[in-house]
Image 1 (cartoon, rainbow, N blue to C red):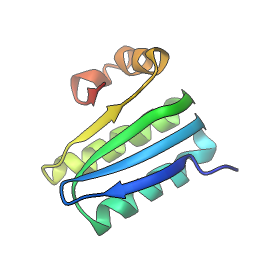
Image 2 (cartoon, rainbow, N blue to C red):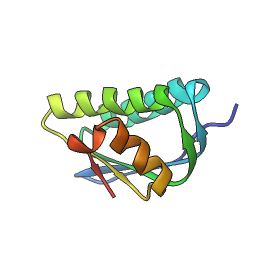
Image 3 (tube, helix red, strand yellow):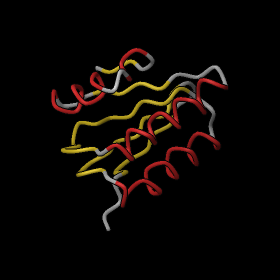
Length: 103
C-alpha cells in the first residue's frame, strides 16, 4: 500500500501536506495519522495539497471533516488547494465547501 502523504512541510503558522494517488479507505489511517501527528508536533493551520490526487472516496472526505473539527476546536483553519474540478465537485455535493476553503 502506497502512502498518500508525499511531503509535509511546517512553518510557524502553516503545515502543508502534499498528497498523491487514489485516496480511499485503505489510506485513511496513513492520511489522518500523518496529518494529526504533524499537527500535534506543531499546532498550526493546515493546507492539504491535492495537486497529485486523482480520486478520493467518502472515507477520506470523512477524514477531512475529522481534521477540520480537530483544527477548528483549537481556532485553526484547514484549507484544500490544487483540487481537480472532479474532487472540488465532490466537496460541493457534500456541502463541505460551506465550512472549508477549497481552491
